[in-house]
Image (tube, rainbow, N blue to C red; front, side, top):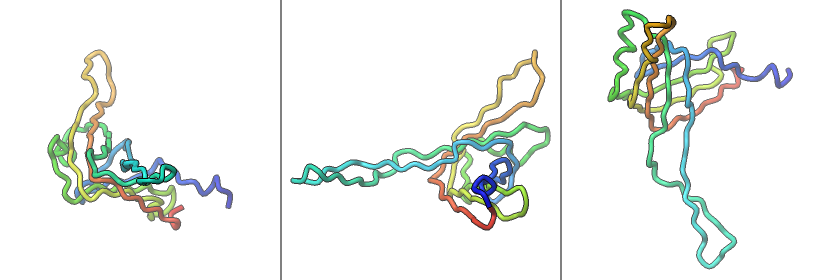
Length: 146
């Protein structure tokens, strides 16, 4: 099998917020960061140690979807909503039901939401963006799903 055929496709994904599967058209900022402090070893100027800093900021995840009338579950995603059961994002293969990758945060809070500009001169889908600050993502890669 060539490496090209073994690459994960990123068009199919599932999102579970607070234990509830919800549909989104786009997920961005799927990342985790860790800050380090550089400490020079005393007496030896040629050695440097990297020590993890205490977390100062939460990472942010952005979810987008088209607003539909009667969509009650996603309308509860307002600023200040706590996701005590966390966030799960699963990258799904084109065939099969086993995710190729899973990204999970144990806790999150909705820190911002916004909709596209309301313009009476244009028609089209109205998009809502929800920003979720989280405690850090863990990544699980499943070779069976590849």
